[in-house]
Amino acid sequence: MTAGSPHDDALFHDPVHDGATDPTVIRHHATGEWWMYYTQRRASVEEPGVAWVHGSRIGVARSSGGAQWRYAGTLDDLQLGDPAGGWRETHWAPEVIFDGERYRMYLTVIDGIPDRWEGHARRIVEYASDDLARWRLIGEVPLGSDRVIDACVARCPDGLWRMWVKDEADGSTTWVAASADLAPGSWRVEGRAVGGRPHEGPNVFELGGWWWMLVDEWRGMGVHRSADAIQWERQGGPDDVILGEPGARRGDATFGRHGDVVVDGGRAILFYFTHPHWGGSELGSTDAATARRSAIFAAPLDVVDGVLTCDRDAPVRLGSITD
Image 1: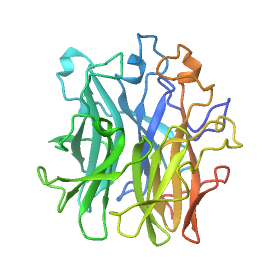
Image 2: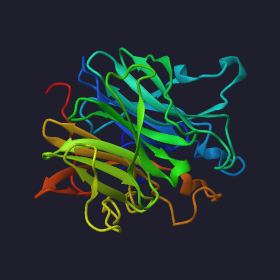
Image 3: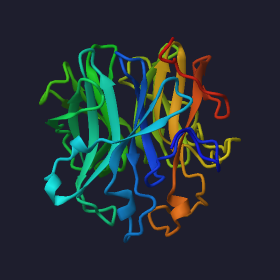
């Protein structure tokens, strides 16, 4: 399956379970091709409780210019358990960066395929790759909590690399750790970066002379701004979000969830997912397969007078491999 579907205007649908979520997008430094990694939720399965949210693998889609995406399978070499025992893991929300020499992935891993939210440790595990296709295990990143998910990693103005994560043990707030060189064992937890309303999926990027953090508040994305990527202030009031109002494209009429921002040649594109057929019920308990289905959309970001804006209905284009 390529971009969209006959039934909506989505950028991408997962062809296996139609459950593409948590996108992260990176450009291959050698070929110029764009690679999207996403959580391949099992939206089409009929299993007890929230088992459909678990047992997921990491799907891959590729594109020359960001308008059309082709499915490229799953990353099966991320499995930690014995492959002979079948797939008994949950992989969520990959974060992929290029450190100047190699690619690094920071992946949320849960053992087993739980059918409920509570009682299961979550951790961040690091992998490395030279080509974005084949990955080797580095190891778990110790972050002082066994309920951390949704890693985001960026190099900050002070020269340190920082990793922001959702810590469910601290009321679903964002915590941060720092490393001088990304070496195993070098991460040091600095504490809570953003509190307030519970949220997940922190994403940090630089645009328009400021550092920005987007967080998914399950009603749109809260926006936080910083001069140094360390001290953060919320944009607007406690209820202000972007992607909270319906978009005009088919399938984009519910709020945007869990985003990743690509800044490319002065353009900033926010990739996010929606549940096109969701009617407002609690997704963890719904039995409607149509409500569980999800799709990837994208929208441009801009900074106007120090304020981050998002035009949800504007066309999107990334640099192509011929640029």
